[in-house]
Structure formats: structure tokens, C-alpha cells
Image 1 (tube, rainbow, N blue to C red):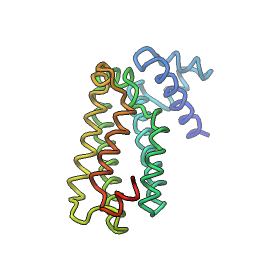
Image 2: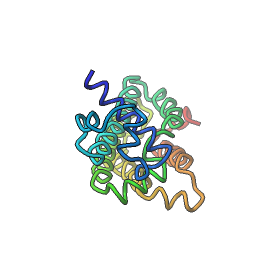
Image 3: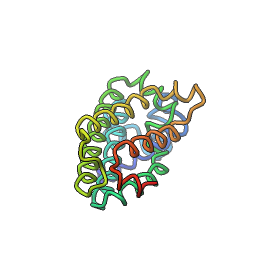
Image 4: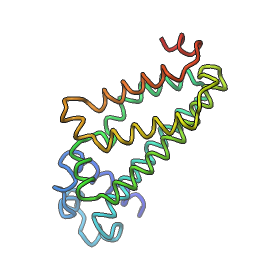
Length: 199
């Protein structure tokens, strides 16, 4: 029951942050939305800062769960197809909403920096696992430096998220940018057999 209430607060706050931005949503607003007292809120979160930190961590866990599900396929060809389809679902990733990124960078820099580092490490490790699986199945180039490639791609994604508002200000869409980057990445890592299948 305690954990359920905590998760409900995180979920509700997250939905409100998506709609209105983090800065404009107060603890009072969240409590009113849930029909709970501030005293109840403080049982679970000592501050809004802590709520934001836990919300971001929950987002990382969500990403990890999705990546775990993809890896369980144990089939690189299916994995790439599912990953491309999964890009649609990632529209709700907190890193893809410019106002949220702006608020996080300006008002919650410590939490945002920690979140970025967590995301980078998670993505790097999963990309590495995906590439090793692809090599094992003959669909990723044998001569590919897996460690360097995983680090490079995770870093590019992390930097794009950090500069999301600049990207959007230039009339570019983060979702389309991510999809394009993934297409370039996939084409660059595949073996001749893998490229024929992909095309």
C-alpha cells in the first residue's frame, strides 16, 4: 500500500510535469490533484527536489525495462525491428520534452546531471549487449570496436538530450533526429548480410 501510494504520486506528478512543466507545478497542486494532504506527501518525499530525483530514476528504470525486453528476444534481426518500432513509444520519455529539459537544467541541475549519467551508462551497456549479440549472429561487423561504438552512440544521444531546446529552436524534431541517428548507426554497424536484411 505504501509503495503503491508512492508510485501514484510519482505517476501523477510526472503527468502534471509533462502537461505544465516542472517549475509551474507545486506540491500543493500535486496534493490537490491526488486529494491528499501535504503531510501525506511528505511521508513519501521530503521535498519537491526528492520527488523530481525519484521521478527521473523511475524514467531510467522504465528505459531499462524496455531494453531488457528487447534483449530477451535473443534475435538481432527482431531486436532492430522492435527497437525502431519502440521509438514511437519513447515520445513520452522525459528527455524528449523541451520545457521539461529546460526546467531540469535550470532549476534541478544536480538531479538532471545524475539522470544524464544514469541514462548514458544504461544506454551504453545495452548498446554493447546488442552489438555483441549481433556479432554472434553474424549480422554486425566482426571488426567493429564494440566498446567504442557503444560509448560513442550513447554520448551522441546524451548530448542531443542536453541541448534539446537548441535542437527544437532550429526547427528540428528530437524524435525524427533520434530516428535518423538510429538509421545511420544501424547501417554503419551491420555486416553485408545484416545490411541486406535491413534494407
